[in-house]
Length: 414
Ligand SMILES: *Cc1c(COP(=O)(O)O)cnc(C)c1O
Image 1 (cartoon, rainbow, N blue to C red):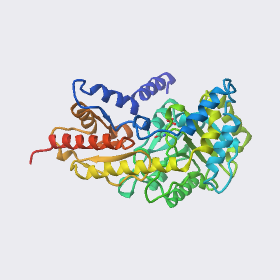
Image 2 (cartoon, rainbow, N blue to C red; image 1 turned 120 degrees about the horizontal axis):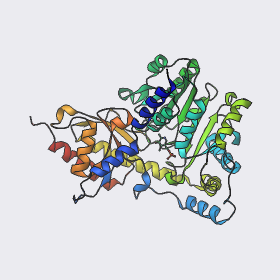
Image 3 (cartoon, protein in one colour; image 1 turned 90 degrees about the horizontal axis):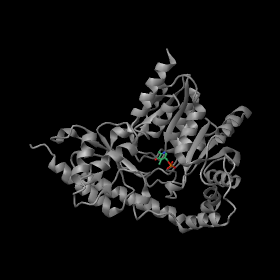
Image 4 (cartoon, protein in one colour; image 1 turned 120 degrees about the vertical axis):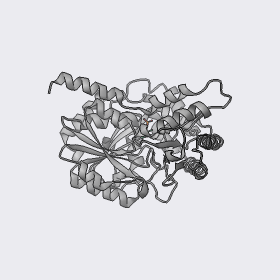
């Protein structure tokens, strides 16, 4: 095959990859400016847009102090400041049966860059990666730029969005470089049990592939299953843990994330591998040095009550959502969310008169009701919708009421 042709095809594929931000901005443009209704966004995962979610004063003070100390105006080492890497190693080790060291931790510009770093490091000719469906489209976008083939395995709504392990076995081959899981889950709001994670680790081990665990919603769990980090199974299978301050500390704009090797058996410690990771980080600009410098204090001084409160609000707002959904016949929630900030609901189009699919639903809803929700197609599931419940309770309730009105107006006449 001519490389030029591959290049052209590849370019097309990259630009046609849907991004959440792309769809949301199109939806925003659809909103009727003349409408008296305030815009309610249940589309974006940025909790700072809601007044009930804000970070702690401790975190703000830590950043202000490091900035004003005049000590952190220079470059940080490319892998991150040592004290920052240490603090994150300690933070993550609290929940592990072994101790991470600063060498395992690389500081990235949010979890987004950690995703792209993983893809860049694992990419090689012919490589494929196993991604969840529904999922988080940044993985698809990154894979397409790196020319890594994407193979989707399904999350099973009837089983609480568990991973379809049989599908994984069938999809993987000798060119599979990683299996990605997102836990707690975006977009489904599921939280995997210890047992499920153990089975995932054993499957990945059998297939000889590493696990990339996106734990950007780590600890944001409010259901029956507590959050269990995949790193616990690091001695079964090499695990790369991705995370950030963005969601748990509610500071997505600070762009402070991490790429962490959980690898007590030392697969990632081979000199060549370490060298490759380090060199790749030489290419990147991480987060601002003074933000990095604030991390040890942010982690040490954030009080448990802050985390508890966030989780309680999320539980409460998710319940508002679920309750309202019960009153709306054309949408169905197969299992209540137990974590993260989003959930998936299924559209029953047979009850609707003039709505052709999830995209049509979202655009008409934006136009008529000034409510933004993400069509499931954007996360890989047609005729589903993703609702973000990290919103103010009053806005959420009003948004759900408007969805109800919308559905009534468009209901098929019996
Ligand atoms: C928000 C999010 C990210 C990106 O995190 P940032 O730290 O804001 O870059 C990555 N993965 C998932 C599943 C997310 O929801």
